[in-house]
Length: 268
Image 1 (cartoon, rainbow, N blue to C red):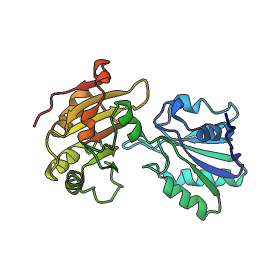
Image 2 (image 1 turned 60 degrees about the horizontal axis):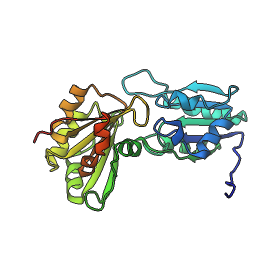
Image 3 (image 1 turned 180 degrees about the vertical axis):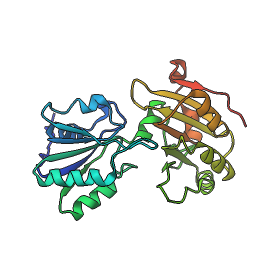
């Protein structure tokens, strides 16, 4: 077996590290090495305790979680803390759930750090949308059912215009696209109504996955017309991924037998 070439992590630098969906075994080797080398670990709310526990005992760990509707650490404070620590010679690891560049504010943080003259490196992680679909045996693209996939957030920026779900539904229908919705529980009524108005069929399969990859994962299969009622009836809540499209109907039957997926009656 060939040795894996590695680049050492440097002091006085920030690393934006994707912690993946939660299961430590889904970390990349580079992410694991970054956690091991960190002198300061800034941890997002959705990073699992098992991953945080991989850091050495000497590592200072600060939780800087951000969750909708809850008290959160301000983005400005997080960025200021990263800059200060890096300038003091720390090896700063900003540990994010999923991937830093997929709904993780990684782009904002890279721009700020570079503007302040701080070196920064991004280490990718498995995004939760992919992990959620894979946990059910659902391929997000498929030659027969989906020619592409759209990752989209259901949570608009405060003060920003809401997403045009009707237009997205029309595009998904015309181009045979799978839709993967992050942070969509609170916007479920808008998502359901808009996608239906855009032309997606009422019986379009939907898979809902809470806490993807963790032992606490819960999954429910339903249809687009029953999205809101399914969320209400199942008790699923954030963090919950929505996989919408024909591919969601390909959920592995063995998972149904194991009780990991709860099929609900699909209504037109």
